[in-house]
Length: 100
Image (cartoon, rainbow, N blue to C red):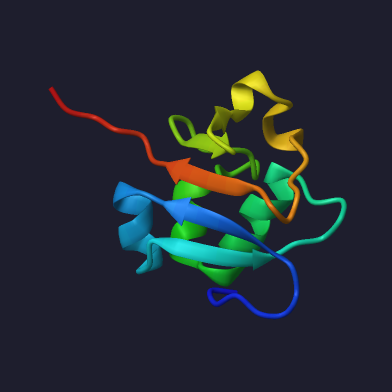
C-alpha cells in the first residue's frame, strides 16, 4: 500500500504525529471508483493499525481534531467523510495540534 504501482492510487500526505505513526510521509492507496474519504481512511487504517488509532474513533468516524484536505479543500466544506475521491486527488491528513 505504500509504493505506487501500475494500478491507480490516491496519494495521501501525512504530517506531524501521523507521519511518525506511519513511519513515512506519503502513502499510496489503491483507488476504487466509488471511494470516499471514509473508505480511504479505513484502507489506511487496515494497512497501519497505529495510524488507524490516530485517525478513527471507536465508532469508526474521524477522530476529533484530525483535519482532512482533498486537493487543498477541507472536507467540512465538501461532503465530509462521504466526499468522493478520484485517483488524481491529493489528500492531506493533519493531526490535532495542541500547545500554548
